[in-house]
Length: 95
Image (cartoon, rainbow, N blue to C red; front, side, top):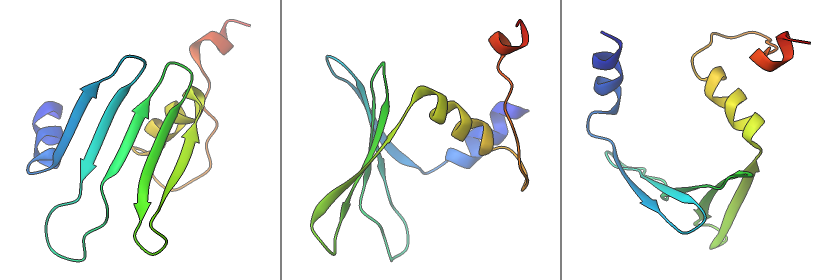
């Protein structure tokens, strides 16, 4: 049932995945009704993840860098309701 729900959410979404020498690059393409935004490139390295998007007003690429911990926190936050949370990792429970 969960797989069906996830598939429905992604139906019609366009993206690419490319494996480079030192990273995996995911490009998200904004499709649909206007106004459309510029594509987003996500570069996953072993030490960090960068998110880049062209700013059409300045014609410069804006870049955000996330640590692996921040990326895990973001992934967890996407499925939670409004509130304040503290994630407890499995390795932290052992101490």
